[in-house]
Image (cartoon, rainbow, N blue to C red; front, side, top):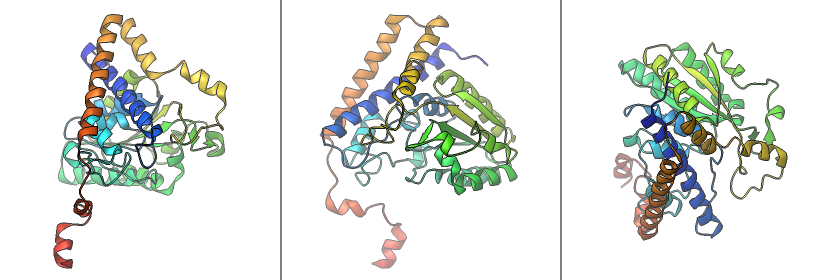
Length: 327
């Protein structure tokens, strides 16, 4: 499979946009304007951008907190993202959650909670519904290497395999589960070994190569849509910031970070675009300027957006029928 110039430029734009959104949110956090934590995907943007761009409009993404790119690709705007962090009414949760716990069913995104791998059984449930209804739709979900050590990860893979469901499991193997390095989590060299226990085909991909991830996701999605069942894809990458922005990550060897800086997904994408003859420096600069303009517009939108009124905090918290019964 080859990647066309329009496809690659779209991937590159969302790589830059994801990095820029999270960098601006980090600045707002350090200015004390954001309550709660900030968890970024710095150095790992290629994974969520790659798999989200491979989805069709009626497919479902069940992301986790390192998947900012998926939210953006699926149509949640940078302005909505910044508004979400600022607790504004125009954020996807309308000011009810201060960080990236968001989703939008209308745009095919399941929201998630902090307990990693909890989104995997939800994704499997959606895939089961698609199969029972005979719909040609797939679900892509993701967690970190640490999430694969939880029971809900294994339960999700088992059911998906037994029922041959149209779901693709991604794993951000970013070397650390908070401060625990991979070799203290599991005795195996590759996380993909865990998929073999459930007879699920497994693949390993460079988690910093957005084109490779996109093409592999396309292949797995096509297979799932054709009735071939689930696939597990391990993305080898590195978390370049702490677990969150309040974590200095002093437990990570500096030389390891320096090694991975050279493998930055944006740098890798730019090199590939040039090698393919798709762009020159002028065209790359045009994309960067577009992203800068989009970010400034997003911040302006969020800052001018209103905070929710007091009574609004209860809207959407309980089902309307339950509220009527209680009334």
